[in-house]
Length: 416
View 1 (tube, rainbow, N blue to C red):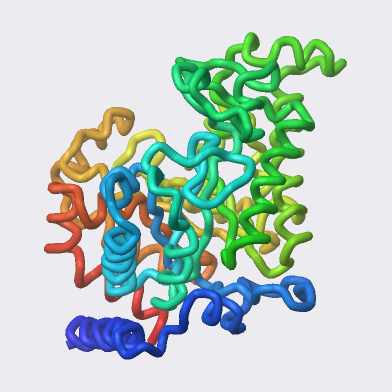
View 2: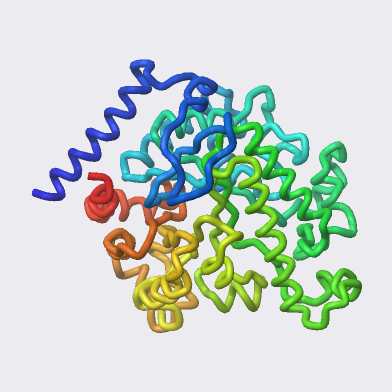
């Protein structure tokens, strides 16, 4: 009976939102986004006078939308077709019980919005309209918090540099001594102030021009442990320990982004989604996630990618979540747990004895959702990704079939 009641409650919620859109109650973009809505997650300093009041929730129920989606929903599509695609995706998202979307708007020093610093992304071929403005307006009409997801350091492919428009600062920086090549792609070096300034200018550009509710970055920090990546910068720094120096550089980058966000609008949230493994973060990516999770001044929320099953031999889901909870115990930073849906039907090569868990089990996502949402010490959940949840043949069949009632029940229990 409870599942049935919850199912109809979600449908009612979705129909109310959709009905508002269809009946014209959802305001046009500029009108709707100027109206104050919900405040941020927890106590944050008073926002600047006249600033946009962000739509955020105390407990996030989030979903990632990747730049790979644009190939399908934007490339070769008209503005009207793109808007229809976006509405369809956000409608499905709301009906699942999601309240926050992390939408990738800059993946490779490019932009899926109107930018003076970054060239248009490869699927953004019709620049007569602004996709970010459409996505934000649509998200807000559906009651979704919109977090603009960027990759600060990952740049263009070497093969793309020669044709890049040098009128964009990002294109110029990708082909300079401030960037290094790794596996055919250019990566900006956070050791340089010029790089950090460009990243922060890009964040400022988004917040100044769009009513985003958050800025979101993921786990792409240093792309390699090879000392050749930044040998010259390290030698000129006067530092003696490469790993520690690199972590200090990522601290500077993250701290600079945080301060930029807060200087533009103190209620806009800044979130980081590092890898699930603490060791991988610190020793391979040189990201001091323990500091960022436990101290002020780096982020508002952190979303470790705990993309592991319960039977993973080296990183079992429950143990990894508990480890992150320990670091977040100070309560300075909100802890949202990221889970994946793309592993269904596949062997988990690094899981040891749990290699076949995602092949045999059909309830991992619903169990993880229930565990996270029932834990009062956690501040939410995030699903990676929209495509693997709703479009992938194997994972979406399982989730939308056998798992849907349990997932939806766990998510909407937090609403009603």
